[in-house]
Image (cartoon, rainbow, N blue to C red; front, side, top):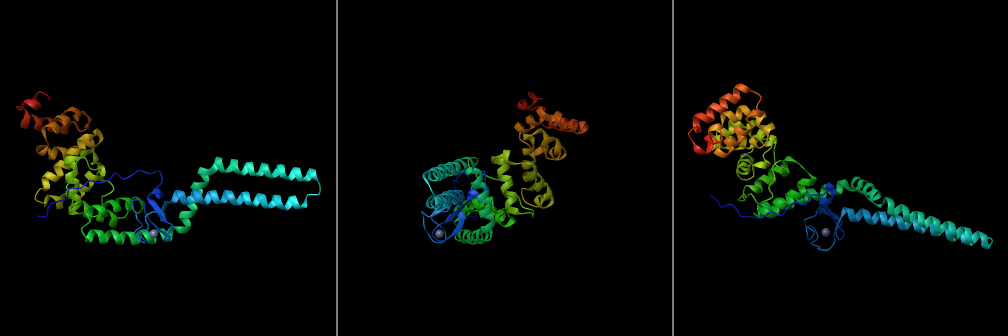
Length: 310
Ligand SMILES: [Zn+2]
């Protein structure tokens, strides 16, 4: 079997706006994700700017245009002025207009940028979609060249913009080549598929062993949804038990999956059984609580570590 790769992922930055994951290349007029440098189309390395920068430039440009318009009107009125009083009046009003324009720009700059960003995305969404689709093809080429880490990191950025089954599937296809560790910034809910997938099941199993806090209700539901198929795998029982064991992290999940927890109790570690014992009151089915208690006592009643906790 092929050895898995030892890798280190970069942390995916968290942005307030999803559009912050896109950058625009001034050189070839195309869009890409913001971890791409140089531009994947023209290879220009210093021509990428964020859409935030693009819209800030548009808003600033509008500010200058308004100033130019005010000055043009001023020039016209200046030429038409009949006397000194009119000249002074026109100058004062012009200065006032320039000042108001500046105050308007400073006060509403942020709101104007957001509004401009919406308009910009609306006007350019076809081109953005087309460029990102081309980028997805480039990422596929990386996968075919076995550059799995590069491909995965690109897919994580792209997945923040286009969340489709295809991208999730491609991410899983990269992840299956990595040796997973607890210190890696792993993801899970961004990978769940609608369909059953052997590699995703294996990934969830690995995550349940090294980073069980990532196992949530959706992940447990996914595993239970494909229970019959998983039981057909060599480690099927262990996979289900390990994922269900992660439910003990919360009282809600323990109560929700109490019956499945009972079914797989034999596979639980001592530490998890002690945890279950401590939170067993959250299970509303009293008969089930008694059955769990009996099963733990029967199996581990003589075990020092557990009997002192019971
Ligand atoms: Zn370019």
